[in-house]
Length: 83
Ligand SMILES: [Zn+2]
Image (cartoon, rainbow, N blue to C red; front, side, top):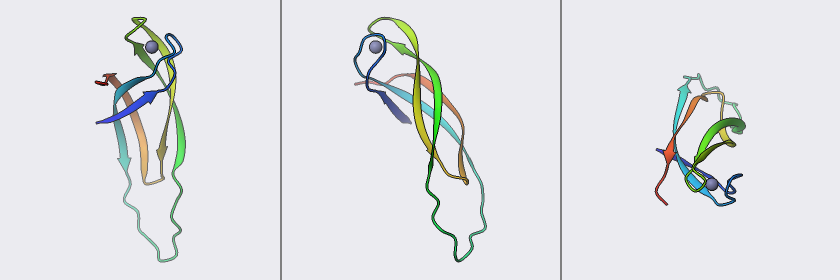
């Protein structure tokens, strides 16, 4: 499972680490000889996170990277990770 760390929680100012479930789609590509290596492009995703200190939810942004053959389909926050 992937994790994401919010460095500064808007509610308590501390950092929290969350488990993420990331769904990616795989596209089979036919590679050509002169294909240049693609740079992953950032995708900004907004999700609701739970602050365990203030015991309330806040909206946070995270940045994930995708390429044309590995696109991000869905990201689910699965709760706080052990720190
Ligand atoms: Zn917090």
